[in-house]
Image (cartoon, rainbow, N blue to C red; front, side):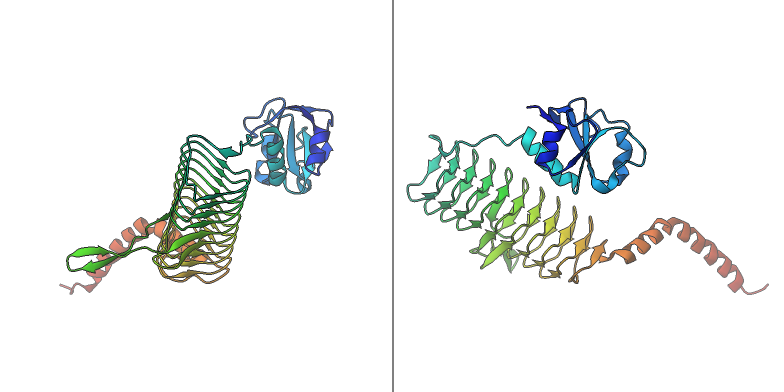
Amino acid sequence: MELTLKEIAVAVAGCVVGDEAAAVRDVAPIEEATEGDITFISDRRHLKLLKSTGATAVILRESDSPPANGAIKNLILVKDPLLAFVRVMDIFRPQPPVVPGIHPKAEVSPKAAIGTDASIQAFAVVEEGAVIGDRTTLYPGVYIGRGARVGDDTVLHSGVRVREGCQIGSRVIIHCNSVVGSDGFGYARAGSRYEKIPQRGIVRIEDDVEVGACVTIDRATIGSTVIGRGTKIDNLVQIAHNVKVGTDSVIVAQAGIAGSTRIGNRVQVAGQAGIAGHIEIGDDSSLGAKAGATNDIPPRSVYSGFPAIPHKEWLRASVVYGKLPELKKKLEELEKRLSKLEKPQE
């Protein structure tokens, strides 16, 4: 495919600065782009790359033009460069079409309900009583357990397991090898041994959620583990039984959330953060990378460190932490001086 800058600008509601007839054939990162590529800059700190990029054109925020460094480059000016670039990627690298129907090598129970134009691909398994929505895609190796429900226009990539009774909404994307509805980690001490507590609840994932690869979302002991509408979960995240995650939250890679915790709406949990069980993270709050939340976090706050404390306090504490060797040396010197002062005069 080849489009002119003018044609691309129309598609993204932008304005061309430079040669409207310049031809574009592909998209690329700004550091790797060559002649015929289009790229973007969304952060002013990267404007310096305009001098070195080999791209034919760059999508730029309206307020960033003309570039402060005076670089000469074909530009498309838009309100949001990232969203515009997403649109351009869809044009030049569209998602491969999915063929509707049930593959001969898929195993679909005659007692399952399959929606219109759904695609059930090779080696996918759909058990008795399961419901698959319209235009939903199950890639090879997906397992849908007995009585599970998957909504319309949802995509489950290879190796996804949706266990019995769990519910997936519409327009959900779940990436390879994630498990929805595995047993929660529940045991009761019986003398010197552990007795397994039955896990009889479900997982409910609401509409417009995206779940990364190798994520585990445990079923509730009773009731539901819930992932709220629009929430985005990165790879390698563990969400335990009876957790409730609100709407439009973001949980980043290797984060772990213990059982029965409530995560509010529009919460951001950074990479490798850990959240203890039976606590509440308030709406619009953020938890920094590697932070450990052991108590409730109030709404509209930012916490970091372990145990997690307000971010500004953590920044001050981290400065002190870096000076501990120096402070230890000074303390030892003061102790020696004090010891000499306290010796009785001979």
